[in-house]
Image (cartoon, rainbow, N blue to C red; front, side, top):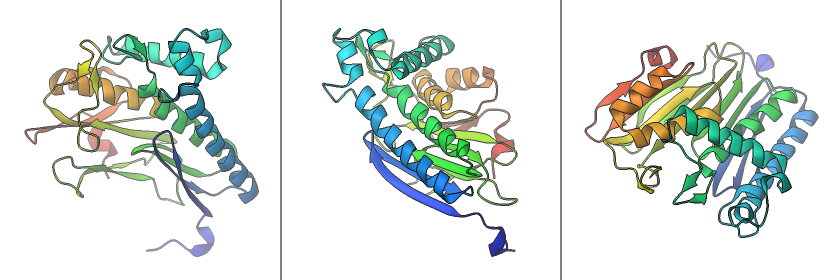
Length: 263
């Protein structure tokens, strides 16, 4: 049965090309003026993140920091925040996640998830009752899209283009994030921090589910580099985290509590 029109929250959608990908916003409810203003601020914030953290811009703070032209203290406060998050992710993953590759500073692996999460929180703080921010396929969800309806996120099947391997439901969660690392979309782009070369594992994709996109994005990258057995064991050890792993042999492995998130 469809929900009554009068109960449906207002919808605001927007897509923005930034940080080398597309960020899609789906915002429900709240006072329209405040939510629109927050959306504009969130979009401007993403572009500012790109200016500060892009490794492709010679004049970005992260590039200048890597060359020794700036100290962390001379950078925007967000630089120290992101580098601290990266260091925490490296410790938690026993070095399988890193913000340094071939000796060069590169926090790209944590910046996008952090930026999308921050954008979603900005919109929720402005009064939106439901927020979905999708940054290149990695999604931060807050609240609900409508009465008695949870957010749902499809997980692409790396072996069957156009098909879904699973559908994740945010039912019962105030905040949920879904991130996938793999080779189907961008080829072998994930680096093994221990060798500095592309990670060679038995995996095609790792999807991680948890409250915060900052972390699930980093955990998906680290688990992919580990391979299916070590990656699954490690993900099982993390609190409030579930995961789906798909191998090149079409074997599907998942954490014990993932079934509660399927729907």
